[in-house]
Amino acid sequence: MPLTADRAKPAVPFGGMYRLIDFVLSNLANGHYLKIVVLTQYKNHSLDRHVSRTWRLSAMLGNYVTPVPAQQRLGPRWFSGSADALFQNLNLIYDEEPEHVIVFGADHIYRMDPRQMVAQHVDSGADVTVAAIRQPLSLADQFGVIETDPTGNKIVAFREKPKDAVGLPDSPDEIYASMGNYVFKTQAMIDALREDALDPTSKHDLGGNIIPMLVKGGVADVYDFADNLVPGSNERDRGYWRDVGTLDAYYEAHMDLISAHPVFNLYNDRWPIYTGHDPLPPAKFVHNEGDRVGRAIDSLVSPGVIISGGAAERSILSPRVVLHSHSLVEDSVLMDNVKVGRGAIVRRAIIDKNVVIPDGARIGFDLEQDRSRYAVTRGGIVVIGKNEIVER
Image (tube, rainbow, N blue to C red; front, side, top):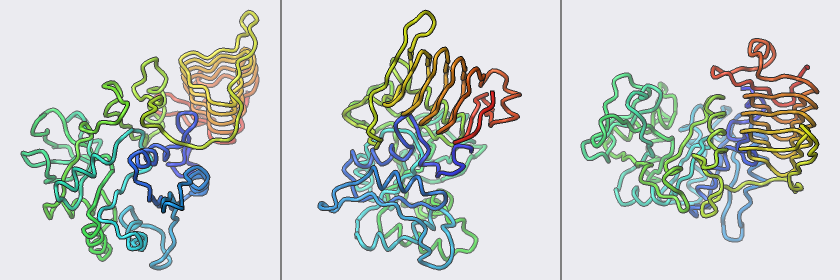
């Protein structure tokens, strides 16, 4: 919140041009997995609209990306967890009769070739393979931690935020943190979901219930994300993964995009991030008169942006953003159709769609004053929600 006030988290804009869900869908599409359903529940309109308008694959070839809201097929109830969402939609699995099912979260920023994970899963014969990223042992209490046998392959424990985690067999100072990405043998997944559905004490969660059930049966393996080689990647951005579960994490992931040699490189043509956008004109920079100069430095500038005698530094400007004369935007993320008035200054802020910053306004200078009107994160980032009224 407030970015999720009227949209599901995977529909939150990211990087000027994209939605969070575009990253996982692009990974699957680039890997040639083209039969995809998106299970949604709350505040799903903008997500459904984006998926339906943008992700239109060839029906002639039997490919699809389809939003599937909670249909209450098993009675008048919503999904009660990620496992229950799968259980209530098993008819989709029965229709396709796949040997394996990929279940990926829709709200992380990363590049991954899923074919490599699936290949390991098939070769191992495991019922489920869980993708994991190496993290420092000191941060174990912030993640779902995977513990393995001495080979480093078979999962022997899956614990949420443990205080007493142990290091990896090949790296005692690191742990495996679950990425929330799974590959299942289809029948094993169906059997586990059915068993879980009968348990009244279960939270019906994949990570909390289904994976521990399969771990207990000795049929769960880990996939080390560090082994994943994405075409076009380099050592700097290889293995990049961000869970943007907080506003500060969301902001920091944006800042990863804008350096000359970014930690996460959007410009990898061999593994593109796909999205859809309106037919907008190129960005325009106008005025060069004294200190009235339209410019952007260390910034991402989207189509339809007009920088009219203003300046952007270390910022992300989404489509249709307008910076008027003598305005300044620093270290900020501006979403679609934000207008910044003459002489206004925005510093260390996230501004959602359709917000108008009036002439002469100051955002990010007095955090106590800002906190009385807007959300301010622990890291001191001012967040102004969609369509909010900003006073001078």
